[in-house]
Length: 106
Image (cartoon, rainbow, N blue to C red):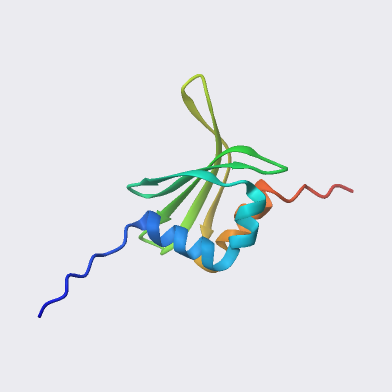
């Protein structure tokens, strides 16, 4: 008997990786409204540092992620910050630094 194997979408893989490595941090971000996109995962957050959207984009050529911190203003997507070349095991820490952890100033 042949078993049907369904390849998970990029969004599903990203969500699995985030929940495996940063599930407690995700609760602190107030994460909600997950949307699977063709190239990644989009969701909303209510962190201490950022309230708005986070878009995690998979770069197939380098097997890394790009994270965009953005807001939608007057129906226009405005990227506030972008980090590239993120490996899956540091994805949660990078997002946490952008969304939740306040900047340290001297």
